[in-house]
Image (cartoon, rainbow, N blue to C red):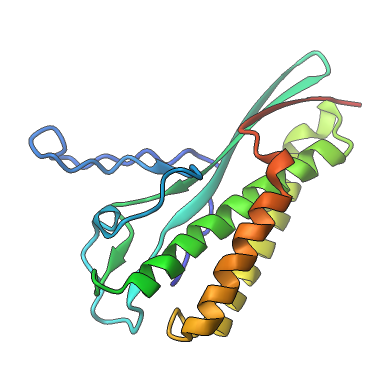
Length: 187
């Protein structure tokens, strides 16, 4: 339902007791072959807010450069230890939450596209990448809000199915940017 503003650091959260329990709080990296399940939502539900579930996702990136060659890496991550649900039997709600994770992946691909298409020079690489990233995150947040409103937070089943199909279509359309690592010649 709600989403997490992406951060530039890769989310790798571990539970202090992880060694003594079977629960792992490592972030789940987006993969088309790996759908979310309710067991991925490990945080305690926040009963004081009206949402039925909460997905915390992020778009993360890192970069370095040698001479005039930029090496850029990005990932979409889901945080199990921050994500929660009140209703583990609601399949339409799980589809909705998967949609939030998929939307984040769409915008990660748009980030890759933008890095490939923008002129980046070595003297302004940090500033340029930060600007590109912030723009993508703002677009993602607006898209996530529209998704929630138009699907009525998964309760409008027909709209949810339409959105799910459109999100899958967008992922396919951006498949050429489904690269976790790219290299770009800088100006």
